Length: 188
Image (cartoon, rainbow, N blue to C red; front, side, top):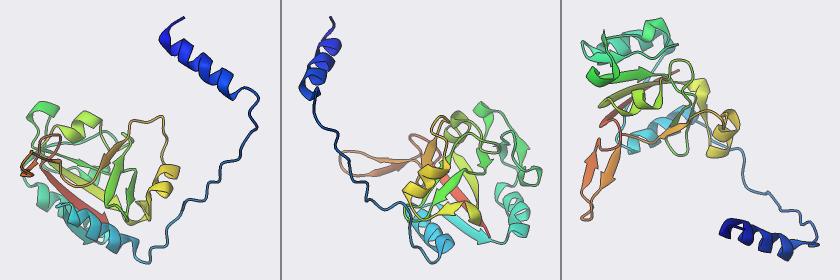
């Protein structure tokens, strides 16, 4: 018997015959946020993301203006009107433009699940620049609401601002584990 099997057998013997106990689940599952777009924009901006809140009709022109002639990864399923810049592969790209699965107002977090228009993990973590379009209807108040919208079997990438870390002297360094620049367009 392995050590793991022995430990599990001891646990089973210890709880054998113990009564079933109902665990109260009284935590908050929905949020009360009056202005989801405003709160999300504020919070994602707190993480040093560059934020643009614009009407949906203006999104393609804004993307084109922000991207310019950068070499960009265009993930499969991205709305064609969002494709801008010069198409590029993973290793020669200056950036990536994506949509998202859901965004969380209270934490300023964007969640990608590799769905249409979101790209693979590598496509969103390797380039130095990430431009993400968040539709207002994708913004939820809190984490429990976001989790309820996500498929746990899909690969999830949770993004709260540009990639950053700090050394022992608390000097912030951006771009170590992902894009140095995160730009977010919130489409209203």
